[in-house]
Amino acid sequence: MKSGFVAILGRPNVGKSTLLNRLIQRHVSIVTDKAQTTRNNIKGIYHGEDLQIIFVDTPGIHKPEQKLGQEMNNMAYSAAHDVDVSILVVDASKPFGVGDQYLIDHLDIHNTPLIIVINKIDLARINQVQAIKEEYQKAFPKASIIETVAIDSFNLDTLLNKIKELLPEGPRYYPMDVISDKDEIFQIKEIIREKVLKELRQEVPHSIAIYMENIAWEKSPIEIRASIIVERDGQKGIVLGAGGKRIRSIGTKARMDIEKMLRKHVYLELFVKVEEDWRNNETALKKYGYKKEE
Ligand SMILES: Nc1nc2c(ncn2[C@@H]2O[C@H](COP(=O)(O)OP(=O)(O)OP(=O)(O)O)[C@@H](O)[C@H]2O)c(=O)[nH]1
Ligand SMILES: [Mg+2]
Image (cartoon, rainbow, N blue to C red; front, side, top):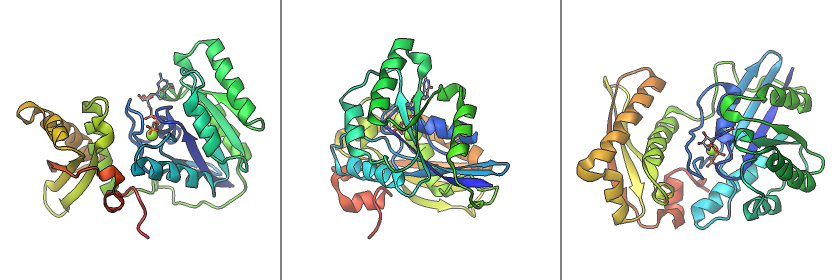
């Protein structure tokens, strides 16, 4: 049988997490229309006949402005090592620019087989697709190129076949019932963060983190208390909304998804806390799961 590890890399918002979810047909990594949604390396496992692929979704590579951004980039860079195949996802609807050049200059993927996925071709004209393809082919002459529409699962079978071709013979690393390396607490926090991101505009989404205060698994309904961390006092009111309307809406939507995931009733209580400039604070980054403990 063939098996191995495949990193999914690229700039923010190009569709990496969408691609992972569609490839394994499970929702293991949150997706929003905001850049820098994914903040950790997240494994999603594809189980096939005589085939197992351990995909690693990664944070979008960008020019970092805070320590959090540096940590996120480092996670992506580290995922690119120790894999059998790398997938570089590119947004076909955006012209090649400084962000693409930044990625090409900083990401070292020249030593593993590489597949360049030109995604979102539904949003691009043919000559646009051609232009971006040429730029990336120039930067990575040995790579294979596949055009996709991840949200519609278009051409993902071609992609899977190409990956299979490139993978070595190997063992089944994970049992058939395992689909991700992340536990339920991680997923609960991500569901809450996804709802916050979807409710908020512009800069505030980048400033939030979720902290799990307490989970009482033994209670029925399960009691979950979590905090939404913001960076400045002014952001607290934005998350709460007038008369607490926004946080109630976030809470309801998050609870419904958590219940679906756990298949149990849940009581969810959310708080908002300010932690000044946490994205530049090493202790805070460790506390919120964005930096490894030494
Ligand atoms: N039209 C179109 N939209 C897509 C496609 N693939 C993904 N999207 C959308 O693009 C946005 C970003 O998708 P994500 O999967 O979160 O992108 P990402 O690369 O994981 O982003 P980060 O985690 O921020 O690095 C979402 O709104 C998706 O629905 C596609 O093929 N076509
Ligand atoms: Mg993502």
